Image 1 (tube, rainbow, N blue to C red):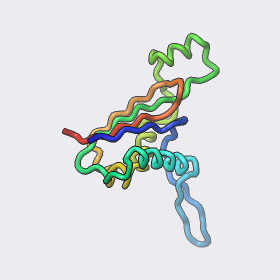
Image 2: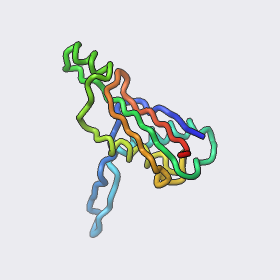
Image 3: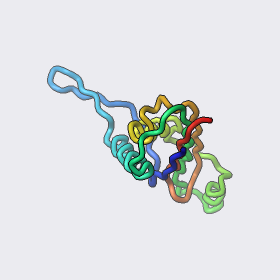
Length: 139
């Protein structure tokens, strides 16, 4: 069994937790941009699961991360990026995007992201930015 869904919009890498003083103590929190993105991912994952139970066993996650093509580039370079001839070596980092996506899928697509034993992440430029997510059982 496999689950496939699209997360529209500019991909967001999972940011490190932030800390704030609260009285005599310290509280940690997830930055708003990361939390909002994870909510969007969770919503898309729930829609893809259609009330099914989370996947069991060892899983493979394949993520295709589509980043926006910079508007400041020449038309020739923009076309090359759209054709896959130019690779994005810019933020967000592939591993941080994967971490945010997988964390958002916890309890929805699978019980825990520790079930993901194989992870494939491809970062490329795209005319329509977003992330394509496919999670399937390892055979």
